[in-house]
Length: 245
Ligand SMILES: Nc1ncnc2c1ncn2[C@@H]1O[C@H](COP(=O)(O)OP(=O)(O)OP(=O)(O)O)[C@@H](O)[C@H]1O
Image (cartoon, rainbow, N blue to C red):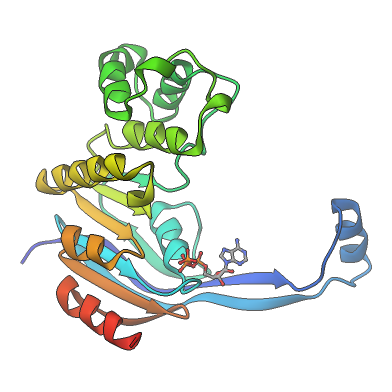
């Protein structure tokens, strides 16, 4: 039997939601000190447990607000669960909020080296990979242009190209296939398939059931923070579709 690469053990996530409209940060703190701010507790995830095996690709399905992104952020180590435990046995490349680490005043080239440093690559390693990054992102005409002048699709293309260059054990993607135009989306799909074929585990959140069917062997379905089912992508996608009819 193949080994688990991700273990999600009874994970719950509690958020405190403020229901009041506060216009500025000063008013927020004044009200907080006066005890006039009320918060409502909200469980974004409730006792979620499942495992992902090495080399499997897992799609996460669910309606808006069902907790998919929260779960991805917990697996990526961006959020700590309120209760429960996550174990990841390998390196993780999170394709979440692509371009979040960019400095928008710097050029594409400068940002590539900056990101490389953040991911722990040496300058010479980044020099070797520079051309491949720009090639994939198709941004040769914009190498020396500050990112603030890029369209959002161009920023995401650069972010995707950098993040998928490393050979991660686990690739985490939130709606990544919506990046850029249709032509670039197909390129992203091909690269994801390549990464899967090379033995990596992919965890993909997508509203496109077709993408989940195409890319993933397994799927997990969340509803209002709870796991409805987990199993073969074909089976879970069919059940999820049927629930909407
Ligand atoms: N930082 C936060 N603070 C408070 N509530 C949050 C926070 N992040 C998420 N939530 C709430 O948790 C719930 C789940 O959000 P999440 O983004 O995980 O859903 P999702 O399934 O990814 O939705 P979508 O399909 O719309 O992207 C939502 O009701 C959201 O309002």
